[in-house]
Amino acid sequence: MIIFRYLSRELLSVTTAVCLVLLMVLISGRFVKYLSNALAGNMDPEVIFAVIGYRIPGFLELTLPLAFFLAVLLTFGRLYVENEMSVLKACGFSERKLLAYTLIVATFLALIVGSLSLYYTPTGVKKAEAIFAVQEQKSELDRITEKQFYSLRGGKGVTWVDSVSEDRRLENVFMSATLEATESSNGSLVLVIADRGMQSTAMDTEERYLTLEQGYRVEGVPGRYDYQITYFEEFGTRLAPPEELSEDTATDAMSTQALMNSSEIEHRVALQWRFSIPIMMLVVTLLAVPLSRVDPRSGRFARILPAVLLYFVYLVSLNSVRGAIEEGSLPIGITLIPVHLVFLLIALMFIFSEKLAAFLRAALRFTHWSNRS
Image (cartoon, rainbow, N blue to C red; front, side):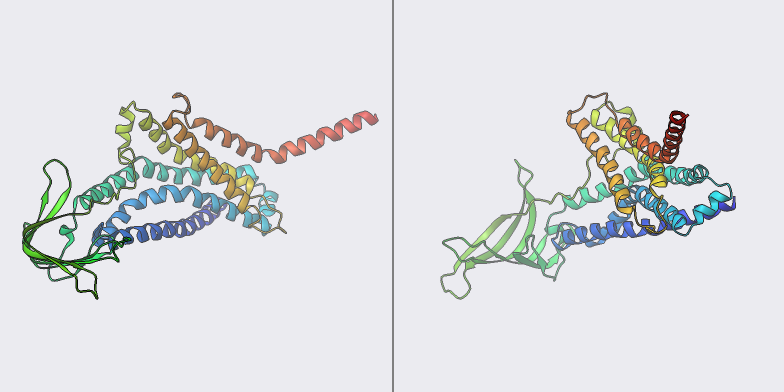
């Protein structure tokens, strides 16, 4: 049990460190993306951290298998480099026994990944999509704050209102925008000032308009005197359509029970994918243990790069088969199980490669001795 506790502590500590690094990379990337959407006026800044929080289970689902894979490589590589593996083998701890200890830890983490994949990730995606749906329904007028300048979408204009009522009616509206330059125009500046404004929706379409009342519109090129001034009692301008904020399909937000009850190919493949992540956790553990065998003089990082490449080949293969099944390129009866079996076979070949090589050497020596006799 001492060896098991020692190995478990090393594996879990390295897994936690690597997972935190990978998690911070993913979170920072999403944070920059959401922040750019907020600066563009497509979503409220207040919801950024809520969306990231709901997406963390999905990030952990992706990072935990890779983190544990790297942890096994680094931990066992250190055991080989510092000759601790030789000491353990001399004390009767074979690599097969250490592999069994590692699989116990991997099974514990696979259960965590399975709970994330089957329950927490779909729940988080569903809640994040609900936030995105609310943000997509908001128009530019819904984000305007009274007595503050608000940048229009695209960054080509600003608006300002004196007051905003509870039903989103605007008082004393000021708008400024720059038209796109053409061959006949250097880019005119448009100013609109109105006493009142409100949002309206077209009857035949879902397009939204800003309807202004009692004001005037000024258009011209700064520095010139040929301004066009138009007085109006009612003036309408089309608001920019809502930006698509959703990152996931409707299938990603479905519960596992709903996928089980569905007979659609896309839903069945998505269900297989959710079960594939914890299975992948165990298979990559079997791959990592033999791949961590290094010569002490080579260093513990000697096989990190080829091992990581093999991991991503595994992941890309699963994604490719999933996409091919959804597109109909592969028969409906094909599942993701053959991909797992192929890499499980590769792992078993790596595990028994030393014994197989020893058996072949013994067979060659026996053949050579027989010929001499």
